[in-house]
Length: 275
Ligand SMILES: C[S@@+](CC[C@H](N)C(=O)[O-])C[C@H]1O[C@@H](n2cnc3c(N)ncnc32)[C@H](O)[C@@H]1O
Image (cartoon, rainbow, N blue to C red; front, side, top):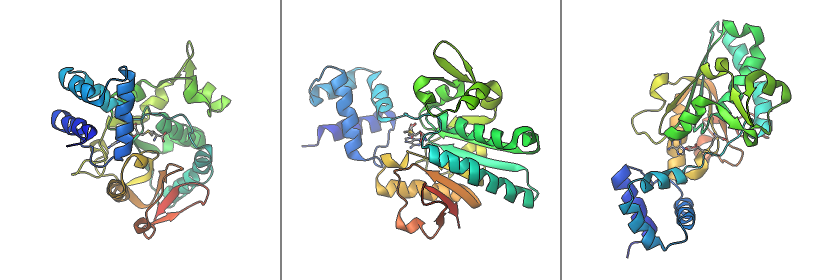
């Protein structure tokens, strides 16, 4: 007999077009189980019935699969390297070739903390010189709720633990226990939905052609099996400009087949340059 979890996932596929084939199956099983516990520890079979008879439940279950946890400057060492090495190198190379546009993509941006952290660092680096450069900054996630929240740019204190005092004062307005990104910084990023498993494109539509100087895809690959990790990495590689830089999450591993296409910039962080 077919595993009940598989039945549940097949149902989501036929009803909501949710393609689960690339995700780690054990992770999806765990998330289904969480949802079942949340509903009062009913049996998986009873949950399957419930799923089929409650129109809102498939959406809630899919949302439960998406782990949007993030915070500003997550993995501070990577952001330190970004500020001190990567940004200066990108800018120097742009100046040498007399180009004034820098293209960035935060892929799997969740609620936007990662993208805003990067935007703050570029702002800090340029200071008043920012006007001479055009930042084309795209941030995407396939979870539309997360993108709406990213556009609003309002966070609670748990997202803020790594934000330095000076940056907090400069780039946020404080409300009643909440912190909202200032309009200028919000406007510097184009948020949109994009599925990294989309078969016919290698970059978000809004960016038209990719050609990114910097791509961040952090703590996203961990949810996928090896075959799909490869698929996504190939897509990101295609979207990078020559000598473009890609940043992965600290626990993510680059498969051997990518070692000849990407050079690790620092042994302390998962930052790679396209060869
Ligand atoms: C843990 S968050 C990572 C957030 C941020 N990059 C960070 O490192 O803090 C993982 C994000 O990947 C997104 N995601 C999962 N599958 C995706 C897909 N197929 N296409 C685009 N985004 C996806 C989820 O919605 C979630 O917001």
